[in-house]
Length: 403
Image (cartoon, rainbow, N blue to C red; front, side, top):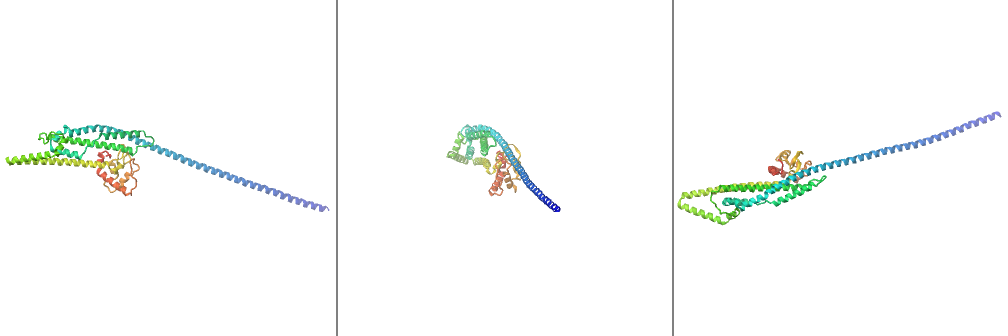
């Protein structure tokens, strides 16, 4: 009996130990599971937090790059604008200096126009030209000169040019910022310069002709007067009429018949004298014609130079020469520098080099498009080279190119 109770109690104890062990193991597993789940959740939150931190850092860095670029772009735009304003101010200042000098030149030339007109009228219609009007050969030369060179002097044109220059000068002085004188304003100055050159040449040419004719008349003072006391204008009309022709024929006929009747030697001497006078007159006429032809040829050359549209990139006023060095004062291109740069105007590569010089973006003048395969542009460059080769010294003489 006793053994049976002991055995039963021992079995219960063993069974109790087994149950509590399972309970403890179950609780331990539950704790471990909860811990694992919590650790996993914590790890996920930590990863998400780090990811958010990284994303935020990337966004901040990207925004900083964008802001830095915007700031750099603004600074670059500001720098470019400042450079444009400085360059424009330099052009405006140069333009103002040139325009002021040009107004002085226009004043000086205007002061010469009216006296020159009065001097010519006095020569043609007053007592100044009467010594010339006494001699038929000089009258014919005067008539030839008047017909080949009509009077173009005009004070009104000069006053208009002066008013235009003053207007654009005031306009440019009022400009601000990056505004600079355009082609319209520079063309006004060019037109005024052309008027000054043409007027000065005409005044000098007419004064020279008057002086030459008076010197020839002075050498003939002892000779018998061939024409009545007339003004040069009336003498020209008189010479053109039939009166002088009939008179000369009658005088020659009477003189010839008288000398034939009296003395053959005297007749021969008279004929020789007439022949010498005729030859001298013909030589004088030939010389005058040569001078007139030379002067007309030069005027034609000057007119061609002044209408040289194909040379516009080199004739316009700029502040740099072909080597991009600043000029002492604004002006056109130097003929010597341009010839050196293109290797002479007769060289094999001169056309291509001339196109390069005319399209150089660093030159602050009118430029050709940089299209070397355009046949029309090549043809224009060939014409420009030929004109520079023929008209170069004339362009320098007119001040349209620097030496």
